[in-house]
Length: 430
Image 1 (cartoon, rainbow, N blue to C red):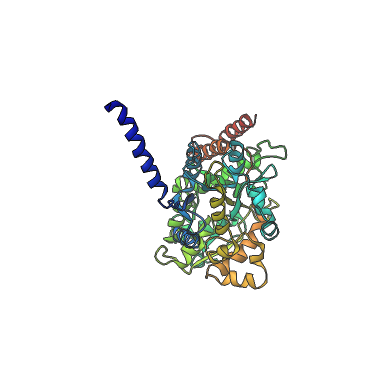
Image 2: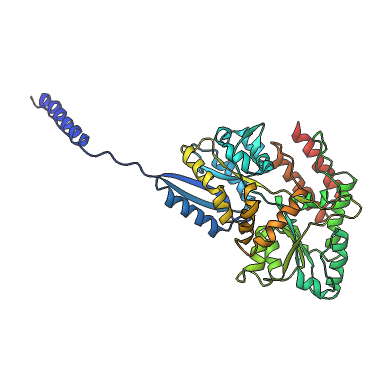
């Protein structure tokens, strides 16, 4: 009898338990957590980005944004590693324009073409959409319209007897030699020539400023031609002549900023974020109020007035994110005209309407830095050049980074190093 009663009693208990549970109020689902991966150099400061996240979280209690920062050089690999898991470790990430072709091909980023409104199309710079568009499809919102700028220490330049910055790279060398001879600084110029993408950015600036190109109209690499070799040889000569800081061969942009902020260099190239930090932040700079910007020099007799690198980026939603709508809502907020205008000290807006009429006056007045960076952006941007938008660019870039490093450290001649990199580009394109 015991064996017959036990199943019956158990059935009654389970039924009563189910009824009791059914009377309990349904548990409310917690906020959707959106994990964002971005970088800590260029663009808004960490404090500014955290403030934007806090604003969004307060306005959207059903969404919680958590943000993580890495260096630019760690960003690409961090994304690819994150996308190897399902769901991915991040729902939103910052993408360099040179990665969009690769990530679209790999299926990492969400096609948001249908989410782009007419207002976005009409009011955002047309060229901005080239950043996040691959094969006619849009894979993110442009966010960081940036280019490298030419910086100089007006006080130190004046001490050397010069009243204006150089317009050509040859003139810069002449001024730098005088600066060095007078003992104003040991190394007048500092660059981002470490074996990273930063070196490619300086290389594009100098190469295009000498009338050269990375690839021809058919996509074939031509950076190893006579112009390319002469340009790389010039870079090496500035080290040999003691006017370029020799540590530049290991530096990235933050190293450049640190050296420049200490008054140990008169000339530097860097992204727009550096201007505010070196000129208005006394906690991080010893040269506040002494720094100016001017049009990037070009080589004499090159037929080029100026040249710089287009360093634009965009924010994208991970294609396999379980919270695509919430992730996109955060990107819309982050890239909105209001937010971009209010946080424009280190990031110029992507919206054309920000540069018109009263909006332009407000934009220039948001911070002391804007009074210089806004008009400088408009002056320099027409001379900005993009890197090839091909799926194999990361591997191609590494080959070129290595070539520059081998040449600048005299392990190979400029011709040998560039020839080997060009051959690798041809191989990757097959």
